[in-house]
Image 1 (cartoon, helix red, strand yellow):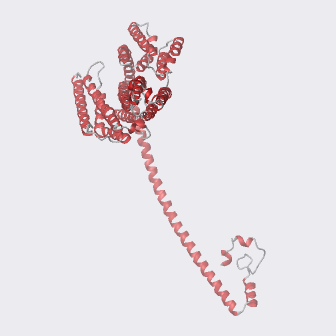
Image 2: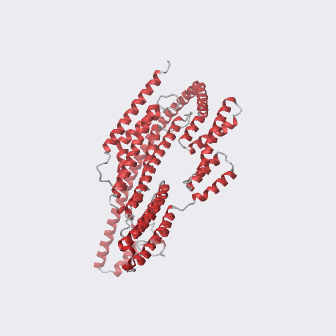
Length: 545
């Protein structure tokens, strides 16, 4: 048994002929037993017998275990094969049934396709005709739309409208129907070009505005030579000192010069000259008063120039440069006040800073309102696009979610641009009540005013809903009502919380309660949905049966 068990062992192949190796293939039990009888004592023989007996028992136990395990695996494999056989048989029946059903479906599908083929072709023709009519309608409405854009100073939008229709108008201008539209559009575009050219002569135009103006005139096919001349002739005026450079110049030239004058005047007329040199009994106080009057006159002129320059710069999304310039100006004036304590110019300086902050807040509010109107225009365009067969279009839910996301991101971006006004390193933020008043300004004059502006625009759409030309479509009323509901439930508190998070909650009794804004927005939402129901009812009542 041991010989059979170890017959396949790899150890035996490495050893030569050895009849005494109990684990080898050449093992001879007689020789092995004779060797043990000759070499071992009785005690050794009994120990060897016990050892071999234990090995035999162990091998028997292992063999029984292997047989049991293999038997269980064999039984399990048999059950699995039987189960697979049954499953395959049932699967084969289901596949036959499925094949039969697919044949029936194919047959019915072919029958339905043959029946509806004529209607499908007719629907495709109607859809293409509807799309063509929609384009023609946009062409007929193009001249008044361009005029409206010019009146609202939406020059970029006017150029986009004209650029899209320009090719069609030129191609079909020989037709009587398009000839009049072509001439009207050209007349309006000439007015638009003239408005854009006037921007070159505007004294407060920035380099970026010049760049945008040139881009728009390029799209309107303005001659390149003329644009080059206008741009270069006016670029010199635009490249006046950057606000930070301007403040450096004001501080280094004017304020530093005044500090030098104060120092020299004090040494000449106050510190060094004896009393007998003062005529008509003048004292140090009278001499210092003359210096004060001289400083007041110059500083009044300086403040006027700085006010104008700061007002021209208060139209930036990122106000960090403006704040840095104002901070530098305040610090230099503090140095001047230390040299001459009577020359306290903190009040006019605080007035300039406060006005700059208010102008910047007003610009942010204007930017938000303009952004909201532009996004509403995009939504109206999306709703007005024809829906052709097989083409996916944005649902009202997608448009609403996109509008909400864009507005929240824009508000956060613009509010972050104002954080420089309340930075702890800025000197004028340490002035009494400046930070509280600025936080109140941001909350009330930007966030609250923007929320109410949204409500006002929504109500204006209610007034034009149902009109045949230019009125708000019912789908827009439905979208605005859903947006107002979202504002009532979450967006109002989210925008107010955003302002409090970025600037801190102002401690003032003049705060507009969030509950009031929520109630106003709720009323607007109800008005919108009521108007939507009225318009839809009117449309249904006009349908002829």
